[in-house]
Each structure stands twice: as C-alpha cells, then as structure tokens.
Image (cartoon, rainbow, N blue to C red):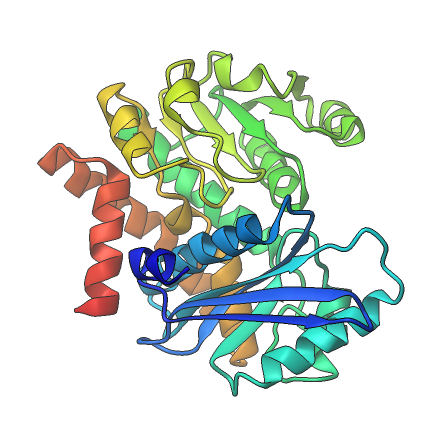
Length: 339
C-alpha cells in the first residue's frame, strides 16, 4: 500500500468502518500544499477494498491537478464509500461519514460525486462544516457542463479551425446530470448529437427533447464523429478502444478517461486531440469551492471562463512541442503544486 501511495505521491490515506450503519469509507488526500484537499464523495459498488482504494487514490491525484490548473487555493482529495448490499438508514450512514471527516481537522472537504446527492451532503453537514454542494449551495453539475461546453468550443477551434459547433457531429457517452446538461447546450448550439447511456430512459429523453440519434453504448466509440465527449465513468480510453476511434478530438466530462498515461501518446500518434479531463471538467470544482467560500455568481462565472483559456494555452504548447496535451497539463500542474 505504501508503494502505491509513493507512486501517486499521496500524502495520506484514511480508512474507517462503522458497524452500526454499515459505513466503509476511504479518504485519499493527495496534496495539501496549496490548501485543504477538496474532492467528491463516491458511493458505489466495488469488487473489493483494494479496487476502492485504488479508485480513491487515482481520483485524489486528479483533483490536485484540477485545483492547481483552475487557480484555486486547494489541494486534492477523494472519498470512496463502498455501497453495502443493504442500506438501513442512509442519512445515518452519511452522518457517520461526516464524523469521520471531522476527525481530519479540515484537511479534507467533501462534495457530491457519483452515487451521492445534495441531500447526502446535508446529512454530512450535521456533523461537520467541511462539506460543500449541500442543498443550500446547489448542484454543481450545470457548472461542470458549462465548463465542458466552453472546452469543446476551444477544442473545435484548435482541431477543426472554428469554435462554432453548428453542424458538428458530437457523440456524448453518458447522459447523467452533466452529460444531459452538456447535450442541451450542444443541441442549442446546432450540433448533431449521437448519444448513449446504459439507462434507456435517458437516451429516449435526449431523442425526444434534443433530436439526438441513439447509439448502443458498446458502439458509440466506433461511430464517425467530429468530437467524442465521454461523460460517464472513467477508463474508457485504452490501447484497444483508441484504435477503434473515428473522431478528430476527445473532449468530455468524465474523470480519468485514460486507462493509463501512455494512452495519451496513442491518441497523439493517431492525430486525435485530447482535452485533459481534469482541465475541461473543472467547472464543478470551481463552483463548489468558490460557493463554499461565499464568492458571488459573477466571480464564479469569471473563473469558469478561464477553462477555455487554459485549454487553448495547453493546445498551443502541445502543437509547438509535438507533445500530448495530457503530458503538458501534467507538467503544468506538477510545477504549480511542487514548484
């Protein structure tokens, strides 16, 4: 375990269990050099504890990089709660998690993530103030979608020569809160939408309300399109799947889209422009961080506008150096965190 932590440059790993509620939780803190570690709280099924720990560690590192490049005085962390087979009192479970967070003395601030909601954050808030994206603070998903939309326009300009999206074919994989909100913006901009999701009702909604064309989830990556926008869970881009892509660029909201760092180089060799996920999807983090700090809507909006500028700068350097945008983003983030 210490070897894994060293490889990820992880500061701390905290585990707890509460037999009364069934809570089994992991908090990975990657870095607090720039400020307290902020990162979402996942509540998902995992095959085993090691898988959950690895997920928390990988995501925590991404949060550190995301916060650094977003210009926030924050470090990166992530919480993973292993979903039990049976949930008695959900709120009691999240209150137990809140007590766990409180023992860390402010080094970690939690937020909504896959499998959790603002209502869950409200339960956590009964036990600690180190939580954001509560019901009062609002859902960060629309802000993530807004940042990804701006990033897709920057990607279209860099790869296709124009940031106007009218007539572009964009494939959106995953129609959860962020993916659907992004699809609404893309449809309004005149893009031709291809969509997939494991839940048929979500796809049907996009077909009926956005004029999208449905594609089976296992076929979407092979569909010809201008831009592929992964908006589900991570790890979809690997040595095998990259070979089947028929797009000019990949720019989406999902975290950890690359199965490994070497996949960025495969995309580069194929001439597929890749928007580093933790740069393009930083809108939600920006919103929850600044809202937690009491910033105004105007300040938050101005900060969200920086996503497009950061991506454009990364693309320009990538072109000049002949290097993957993912490598450029990693170098920039590490320079900001470690000096």
